[in-house]
Amino acid sequence: MLSRLLKEHHVKQNERKDLQERRRREAIAAATCLTEALVDHLNVGVSQAYVNQRKLDHEVKTLQVQASQFSKQTAQWISMVEGFNQALKEIGDVENWARSIEMDMRTIATALEYVHKGHLQSATS
Image (cartoon, rainbow, N blue to C red; front, top):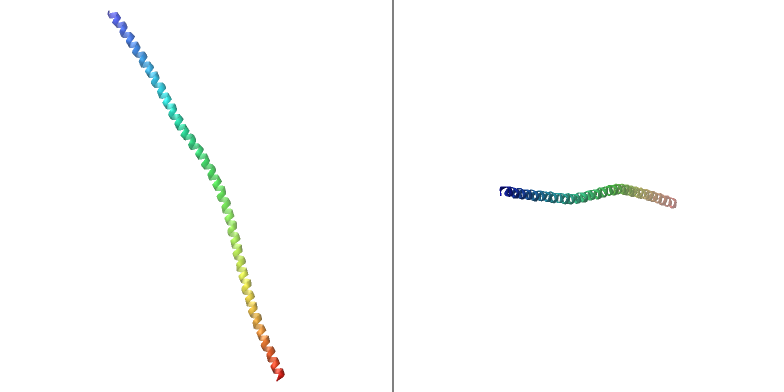
């Protein structure tokens, strides 16, 4: 009877060890699956962040090129406007010069008329 109880005890103990070992393996498998799922989820996020970073880098380079081109074009426009302003100043200077010459010519014409009239009156008198 004692040996039968001892055998039953050993059988139950072995069954518990087997059950415990099976549960341990299931827990390890579940933990491994969870870990892989978490890593996969994180990898998707990291991968998306990497793709977004590459897109941003490309956009930054494109924007730098466009900004450089815009700066050059703006400098050209400024140069053209300055040239236009200089031309307008020169036109204004020529216009003032022409007015000055016109006034001088009128003064000379008036003086000549006065002298001519003076000669005519003295010749008739």
